[in-house]
Length: 314
Image (cartoon, rainbow, N blue to C red):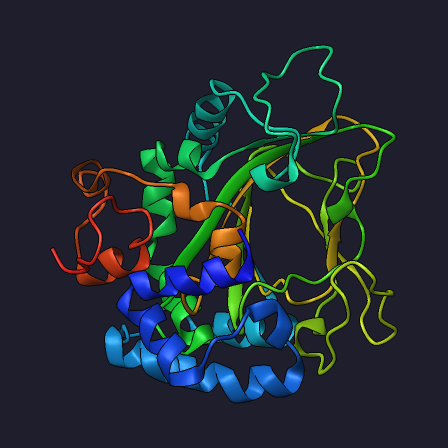
């Protein structure tokens, strides 16, 4: 999808329409530099806060302070062992693509087999949405409280996916140091569905680099001198909330395999939402709200996946 088509799609939703008309036609990747982030982000936040009321915080202040300082926060045992198995089984019953997002793949669906030739198999977001567990966890009140405080407005879910990495001599692009350039403010929430140690492909995160004033090209970034890398390891069920504008990368596997899922919260339905194809992930409203409460805020958060458009409240 080209930039002009993305801008046209913004008119489909009132928040994005107001952003386009009050701030101007812009593409996120062209404006994600420190000065523009500083100037534009508060304007978007103001528009969102006029559209949807803030939620009262219920999280621990210490968690927010740690998130703001380091750029990430760990949640051991976010999923119980039965929940991990439930979600793994759900995903493994579906075919996937040879990239962590569909747009980067060859668009051919494949099943995991002993002779699978690639180092990655990714499941599209619509597969994730079929899981009632995922829907409940995406709307977890404590996580949303933290995210809303960090963003300074109630968030929008703009993407979700899940993928395997396998031991392979070929290096996957996200295993190079990079920044994500998704939005003016955003957070990724990812959950390990397998045990992850230093040999099975942990995410490497550079604490504090989310506060850097410069923004280099996504995949042409040297390791910073001011931040020591941290390996984000953990048992299956461990989760992390992270500002992935920070420098980070996956560590190539030395053995075994890794399964991870993630969903991302931003200020609005940004360009990445469309270019990654997340605008195609839809779920019947009745089915969606048979698993989670049909509140004003859940309707807003998940508005892009609800088949009925233009309605936030129940």
